[in-house]
Image (cartoon, rainbow, N blue to C red):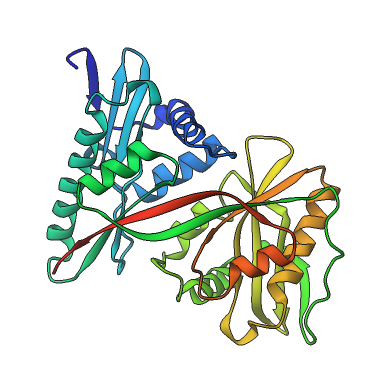
Length: 313
């Protein structure tokens, strides 16, 4: 492997990184790609020290492997390890070397930031990416959670469902973005692995990102309070969009609000010319999200798995 170049990520790598991420995912059966805006938001928002927290492998000018270490936000407990090797370069030890570097770097970050606090390392991959799942298992990581990507056609969406009594639904309002952030933190607090992020970091990844689609996003109100929300994002295919975040605060759950928001998003997507909506969901979501999505027409199309390694105090 002497002909390969190893170096850190740079901001000019976004196009090549987007191609590699989508190539790796498509090889494992993923139906939906990431946009450059999505990759940029992750790389700039999660990888805080690219020089020390990333490794890229190039064969000439072609990016053939990458690994990043995404440290937790202040007060967090989870380090994410995104990475991948081009399908044509597998079986040469690149994945093993990249993962080994990630695990060593994760341990360094934990020792430096919170040696007395238990942290977790999470590595997620499509379930059908067998070489990646074998790599994680051989490195001692354990299966922790399963996830679905779900799709719904917008050509013939269900009738727009009624909003629960006492609530109103409006389009996205940027004047409420800080209230939305607070509602999001509350709504996701009991989701597995969730880490709250400060408003500037959260906004850069969501409502101020280049892929955010306000015309396909909605807010639910109970008087002046936000009861729930739905945020949508662009996808590389012109006829597909992503329902990226659906949240209902605890006092307003189990009343049909999420279904009402989803039905409006599907209707708005059809009017805007989209054919398909997709979303990702925790298969064991404690709020019953999978059933909610199925009731409005979403169906699972791919599965992913998160592997975990505990970093003890």
